[in-house]
Image 1: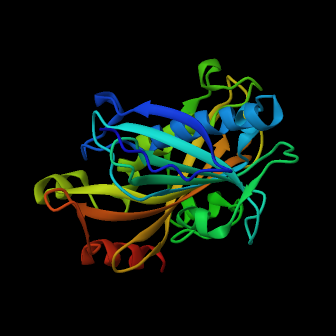
Image 2: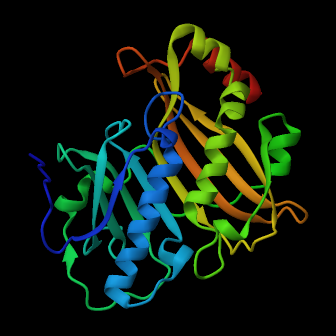
Length: 289
């Protein structure tokens, strides 16, 4: 029997999905970009329900996602959405993604909408608590001078791509999941740069994991735009580290989006986090000098 623990009013059901084999990565769980794809769908459905229009990419000028439980192949998902009515993030749209069979919370998103919302019932902080920032700070990520970071050897260009028509929403702006897909495709290069190589991960049965992601949109991205992704490690602690990305227009160097990810190393047998290896912490410290 299917059990869905719905949060009830004022939450609206905004998405139902399924974890396909091709949505999963080398860790055998759903990849970050497909969480963002689901939340993008939910945000557009919510916008249509409360405003009657679809603002596409403007459903979230900032999207803050937390991953609470792994989703594996063949699991069904469901999302409920509402407006947060109190606290620092009041006015944000809260999305709660659950495993549709077990009812367990799998992920959450907190969106700062870029469109007008009037007269919609709101939820309280208790209901929205799982979506509130924890390992990544609240608020927009500010752009930085990445040229200096690259020159100092603290950052690298991890990806070069071109925005495509098929990646854009009804407003002609590239969607958040298309932006995040560039980050996930570049992730291995950044982890290698941090000293946590694919060879070491494979040999020790460990995996790369993000537990929290924040994406800030800084300007529109039209199809045909060349994009360079600059990436670096901002801080590194004993058990986690903060990865930063800045997406820039390739020819002008103008920042168009920025992202912060709280990352950890996971033992693929126990599915539990392990401390960041000392050699990676030493590598990070050496790059700061």
